[in-house]
Length: 393
Image (cartoon, rainbow, N blue to C red):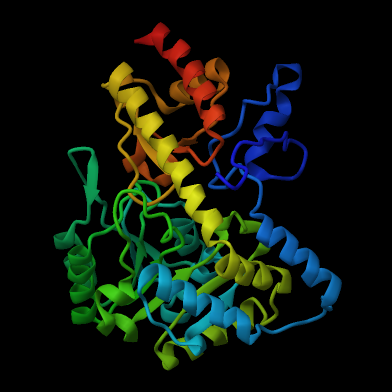
């Protein structure tokens, strides 16, 4: 490989959320104890982004800014070349993050008391944002079938038929299950939303992680959905740029876009992080080779985890993720409570993973495991887990 996907540094006491639990280990800490919780990657930043930001800082003012033409061109080109999705520059609205865009979406297209439809298990900020804004969470849980998940279209149809429910929140690819929705699934969903005129927030922040199949954007699956859709993308997952606070929100319908921007201006202000915008441009213009090598590492890592459980502990299911660097691992066969399982992993194996019920009650008995770490770290992690599981199985 041309890039470094092996170096690990001790990130305790640096303010990074995922590393804070390890700050209490003291002398028990080892370099291979890398947290596998928050969806940040443990790889050095792509050098093209690092060097490009250095030049930007040396040559540009860091005063108040607005997005510039080459940023828009980079986002448009990335979507076209990687995802065969054609957008116009004027469709792009900058947001500090996808979660911020969820909050704006809820405020722009619903009122307190209205329903917002989600599919648990699901990334926690969806329900958290809906509840915080005094809307009603309408849960149409995913159907678990043969260790994979599918949408419950009958329940979705029923929920969309209720005029009190104004918005459907789609996570595509899905966090935490890793599903990449098939084109026909997206088309079936779009048909229901168009029939009942329910707005769609399509969170496609994981879209670049095509591990076992091709991702189809909602705009490509059904172009007719463009009158109802707010599509969220970002370089933050693909290039580990979450702290740059830059997401690209794509809104083709000018009426929806104006309404969305009105709320952005009112509650968030209309300023941007110029370093984040530049980092996004650098990633999309110069980071493709780095990202393709990253995919090779993630694919290798998740196969390692999958085969570890398949061959050593087949009662614990770790299906291959189709479209993220997180794995949704089913520990229900151990008949442990969530507290017992978390204690076993953390205190015995020094493995820090996200507990399943963070993603709704449907996640009981699961953990979400982040495999975007150097392969040698994952090997040591699985060895510790093996030693612990031998004692309880």
